[in-house]
Length: 203
Image 1 (spheres, one colour):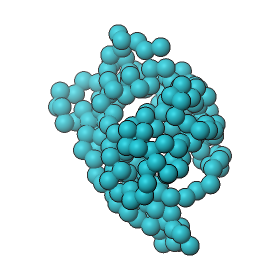
Image 2 (cartoon, rainbow, N blue to C red; image 1 turned 135 degrees about the horizontal axis):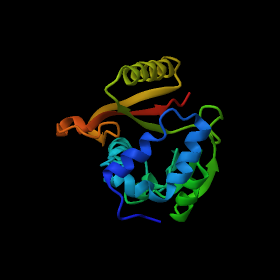
Image 3 (cartoon, rainbow, N blue to C red; image 1 turned 30 degrees about the vertical axis):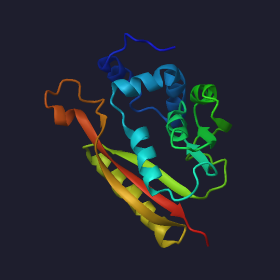
Image 4 (tube, rainbow, N blue to C red; image 1 turned 90 degrees about the vertical axis):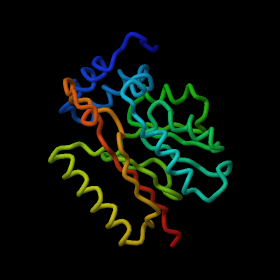
């Protein structure tokens, strides 16, 4: 159930409470967040789902009506809702949170929904097609280390012939920062991000 009285500061406080959680604790956190997830993302000006769908649609050359979409960490199903508007029809969702999968099921858009904690568990679906992912760019040493580590892994996947790079796009004002409660500089209230698009190699 949505809570119209929630403010940006409420969401910041809630998100900050998850700092330092291990993967299992994070899934319980997402279970508790599921009902207000989309509302809170709107409050936080979280543009990633809209930007990702725009980015993918711009580069997708096939028939949306025939495409099979694997929505990894599908959350409440927001990406599927946006992709349906672009003509996509076939969705399988994967998420580590039962609460989020329950919200995704309410959309009626998914042919299948699967529970899996990615990383410790393998992806419960065949790989293929386009791979679109996004990453927030926190202004910190750990954020920079993650960027270097991720892009090194992406480069290795490309060098091994597993997939082909299609496009990379830097995103201004990707989302509002949750760890910056009292900053009067509006530009510093937002974090930038990066989106990556690859296509699985056919060989």
